[in-house]
Amino acid sequence: MTASEAEFDVVVIGSGAAGMTAALAAASRGLRAVVLEKAATFGGSTARSGAGIWLPGNEVLAKAKVRDSRAAARTYLAYVAALGQTGPAGTDGHPSTARQRALLDHGPAMLGMVRDLTPLDFAWVPGYSDYYPEAPGGAALGRTIEPRPLDGKLLGSELAHLNPPYLAAPGNMAVTARDYKWLSLGTRHPKAVVAALRVGVRATLGRLRGQRLLTMGQALAAGLRIGLQRAGVPVWLNTPMVELHAEDGRVCGVWVSRDGSRELVRARRGVILASGGFERNEAMRKRYQKAPTSTAWTVGAVENTGDGIEEGHRLGGALSLMDDAWWGPSIPAPGGPYFALAERNLPGSIIVNQAGERFFNECAPYVDAVHAMYDNDTPEAPTIPCWLIADQRYRDRYLFAGRGPRQPLSRRWYAAEILFKAPTLAELAEKISVPADALESTVERFNEMARAGVDEDFGRGDSAYDRYYGDPTNKPNPCLGELVKPPFYAVQIVPGDLGTKGGLVTDERARVLREDGSVIPGLYAAGNVSAAVMGRSYAGAGATIAPAMTFGYLAALDIAEHTPRRSTR
Image 1: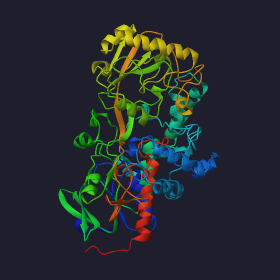
Image 2: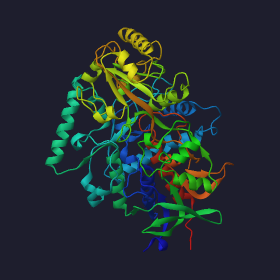
Image 3: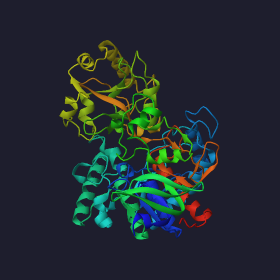
């Protein structure tokens, strides 16, 4: 059967977590589904991610005896979704309370389905706090889960088509998020040594068993794909959407490019857009986002060029949050950006603007950190790019961008002039064109506060979130350490991202809405093709993937329960 002859109940665009979960849910309800993927690989940005899942009230957390309540989660999510908003719920990018409620009410059932229909299992990430744990309803011990290691050989020949990770662990070691927290400390803590041993033993046992162990986004994408194999759901790679097809005002198919020809894939009951954001579309970034911005600063999948957003908008879909993204301070490395996570929380480093001054809490959640970069950027004291400054003691103790303690940093970074080293702060300041007296004064004040253990300027280390990636052996504050041992380092930081946050406006059933709030019949959206339920903020690790999967699931359920089968011929 060729694409021009094909007809399915549900057509899903995109094979990331949102799309594959949607297709799996559709198949579980007896619907015939297909996943159309633009790339030569499946998994999209999900396969490149850490694959944390922020999902209060799920069965994995219950099994781990994590104490929580639905009321607390609802209060917290409402708080997070309101951050940075200027209008009431449902306006100015502020997601509706109905969508927030849908995530919390149906997310656990979605996860139960995934666990039942795939080889995936999940584990709580102990202590990975919510990003605002001190806020009403916040959880200092966290609500994030992650995939357990999965044998990729269960995929068979399809393993070759899995989108590669954003960063591969050395020697293809299977490293989890739980491991990474401790590995970042080098050998500073007994748990760091235990984590290294755990990773080594896991790798050895995997080899002895003939396994190809996958973790994080690789495990999640592979596990969902195995679920689709078992359910008989085809995934057509190298099949980009050309345009949506509508008849009598209803979306009922997708025109695609396949095997060199333009063909129509018909959808009897609905089309689910799960094609990702527009982070790789330079024109869209310049149209919607603040300058400076660049496709070179994102770690999102290269195929994420906003196709689904533009097509949904062409058919009347409203847009929201298009100026925002899942931001994160990043090092603009020659081979692709490095998303700085633990590096900002560890003691012995600071971030300064081009005037040599600190301007925010370096440990802040990564979306907030980049908001601070844009909000504080002025001609007198530019913050884009800014500089992470560290001393040799920091380098002697901790991992940095995947490099072990005392291991030389990349020569390519020095050659690209994104990394500098100097025997004194004054000489370092000259190399990065920062006023030497200002940088020295900033470091002197920071060192005083580090000795006292209190950041009087920005509160670094006050939050449980700050301390998660800190060094618990560093006293009195796990996130504050003096910069005293030469040589000193400066690493360039730019506003990178995991993907864009804006897209089509949807309701609590994942239906795409017009500006007047009416529904576009037959059209659904989930994941980064849709405007984020988190609004302008970020609840916790995995607050991208959990809503993507949940609203993909809800789209399929709505199609199964509310959309009668129609002939499209």
